[in-house]
Amino acid sequence: MIKSMTGFGKASDVLDGRSLDLEFKSVNSRYLDINIRMPKALMALEDRIKKQLGSGIARGKVDVFLTYRNHNENDLEVRVNEGAARKYVEALRQLTQELGIVDDIASSFLLKLDNVITLEEKTEDLDRVWELISGVLGKAMTNHEAMRRAEGENLKRDLLEKRGVILEKLGLIARLAEGMTQRYREKLRERLAELDQLYADDDRIAQEVALYADRASIDEEITRLYSHMDQLKDLVNLEEPIGRKLDFLAQEMNREANTMASKSVDLEITSLVLDIKNEIEKIREQIQNIE
Image 1 (cartoon, rainbow, N blue to C red):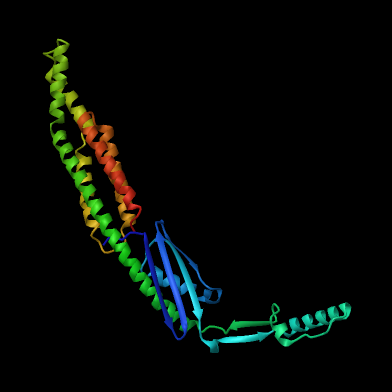
Image 2 (cartoon, rainbow, N blue to C red):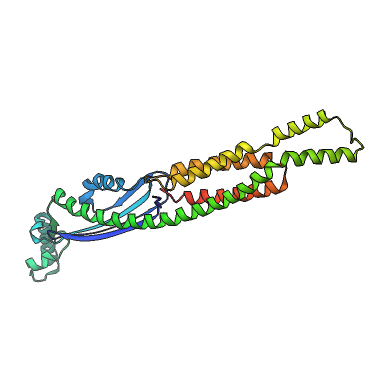
């Protein structure tokens, strides 16, 4: 099953008064590269998140965005900074003496000043929080997987269509190649006739034709390219990541096409080979999206 490296997953849930919103997106990358944006208090869970993502994603650049809230009142703690409050009081009393105003400092006034009182969350139970994160991440990964598989089906269909075009062109090349040596023999005789050498040594003609056939033969390249088309069909049906294998196969396909183009002395064959190279390049572009 072909999977695209491009996808998006999103999920949220609430557990024991804790809420979590998580979303992530993935794009093409040569390797698996996971970046996570999450509250500092939960950073100890980063490796667990990466491990769970890695169990379902083989490669790609993955950006994860995690928003967490603890709504439990029992997990909140009020802290009073007595030192800061004392400094405020001393400064205010000095100010009232210097300005000759009434000292009416009240505790309610002090509580409004910066850093006098803070509301802090108690240390999180990370195992309990992980239970929430793991469940939400699993749901998001399911959505992400569905999107990647759907796109993968489109990629597979496109690759097989391009394979069909290559096979059609390759069949035409094979038929032209079958009579290439005979056509060369006839052209050679025509040229000799034009030069009044109609009675040229048949052995010499045979030798020239043999040299031409050896130099211009593309039978091996045709056979290997047919084999690569079979491999392409097999690979797109595998239930495993195949992006790297397809990339290597496309390189080999391009190598055979280049060799055929360099050997060809037939304009029609050369034109067909160029068509094949164009389809191979399209295949290589599509492969960059495959996991």
